[in-house]
Amino acid sequence: MAAASSNKSPLKYMPGFGNHFATEALPNALPVGQNSPQVCPYNLYAEQLSGTAFTAPRVHNQRSWLYRIRPSVCHTPFEAVEGSVRNNWDALPPNPNQLRWKPFDLPSNDAKVDWVKGLRTVCGAGDERARHGLSVHVYAINTSMDHTAMYNSDGDYLIVPQLGKLTITTELGILEVNPNEICVIQRGIRFSVAVDGPSRGYVLEVFGQHFRLPDLGPIGANGLANPRDFETPVAWFEERDEPFTIISKYQGVLFAAKQDHTPFDVVAWHGNYAPYKYNLAHFMVINCTAFDHADPSIFTVLTCPSNEPGVAVADFVIFPPRWAVQDHTFRPPYYHRNCMSEFMGLITGVYEAKEEGFLPGGGSLHSMMTPHGPDAPTFDGASKANLKPVRVADGTQAFMFESSLSLALTEWSEKLCNKLDPHYYECWQGLKKNFDRNWKPAASQ
Ligand SMILES: O=C(O)Cc1cc(O)ccc1O
Ligand SMILES: [Fe+2]
Image: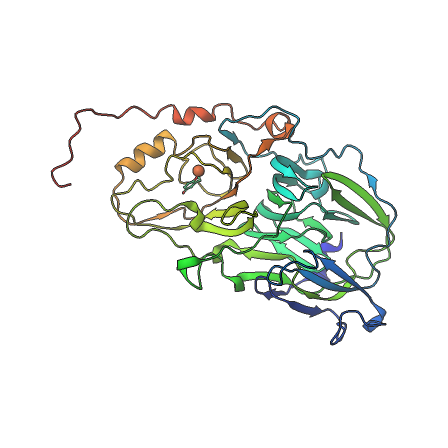
């Protein structure tokens, strides 16, 4: 669609996480001193988009006021899209195994696959209707959405491109998101995804609260993902009286409605409920400088909390390039059994706990209490390594969606995609018994 058209470039963003923004694409389009004048500037319609309950505490309250050519309500009734099955992770029996997927297939050249068709659910837990839970998806697409916009009634999408730039036109403005950047498109916001070619990535969807920055505690006022590095697009609109399809994902099912004009007709908006992007290269890494391996929570970019303090429905965690300097330490990730579920993906490079087999565009799932950790070659190498300061993960970006919920697989991810690596468990079979009953501490210890 017009997402590639020239009047969209260069894109402009406003800095800051959770700010109250005010932006207008035409001068004086925002009403002054009130939200809902009897007649709005330019004869626009005023529409509030609520991201939290009206009565949510002020610190968490999110809403925006949109001033648009027509209100969103001008469309035909929604009808279920044929074949758009619910994200059903209850179809197959549970599977507690360590799982690894080879890179998910890109569409073949002769197939035209857009975001709506090319988004596949890998695993999830919870219930959209109860607004508690999450799901993990991957997308593999090669075509821009044409005269089509989507919104997610069920939750927020955190999008992690792995291959190819996404140009995402939203009601509140346009974002360009490249690999090593992420973006968040919240519940209800209509958007249309355009691509330049084959594109692949990962999506974390949360049904309850919105993503927020983790508290920093003793780290202090600065560090990890700094608020000013988040970017929200300025208002952008088009005036196009052409047929559009609006897709709503509602309770896990896709519905389509028609309208005779673009949904991207918001001339001005203000508020704090708006999409944003973030460049992972801006993450200020904090890590051990003495000994031992810090828990990966130190690399949390964004968190979606549950109602239990300190326990996330989902954390988005990265493993960014950094120095490893710890003395007398086994430096890679430790062997681990977790009361959380760990879905991992690789944007580029090689992950420090798996020297081979975990590839960009693939994934892994280590479910609740399922043991995992470095493979045999990594253990051998790290046990013998010279512990001088070394760069870790240069040119690499792995990430984890970590959840306190127990994730279940879809039929697509376990069977139909045909990417599960049946040999994954073998990477630990070479871990030998090194136990020596007659071991003595070295004289110097
Ligand atoms: O590779 C993993 O399993 C993720 C992970 C990384 C780390 O540094 C420590 C614990 C952990 O679960
Ligand atoms: Fe782990």
